[in-house]
Length: 143
Image (tube, rainbow, N blue to C red):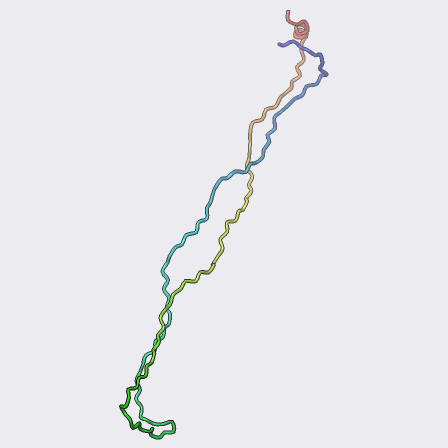
């Protein structure tokens, strides 16, 4: 047993113990990447188209008042040409790009309670009364 030195002591002793200090750190746990790709699909639509066609109609030569029209005395004198243009509609396709939706990644924070445990140490002070046999050798010092 070490010698007892009570010089400079006022009869007090400081006892210490460890405390579990708990906090959090922020660290990445997952990554995500938004990727936009173009996919193609076949779209079929029906559109109405019109087309002009010709038809010959032969009528008797009658004026607006119902009388027989005047006869042209110079039949065959010169060649007469009348030209008509017929029209048709054909489907035309062009692409129109319009925004349809906005996609946003939103971060949500969820909280939960996580139990944390650890071993902590503490000092313990015991006061043990000494017997007379124990006190005498300690006072005398090593002999």
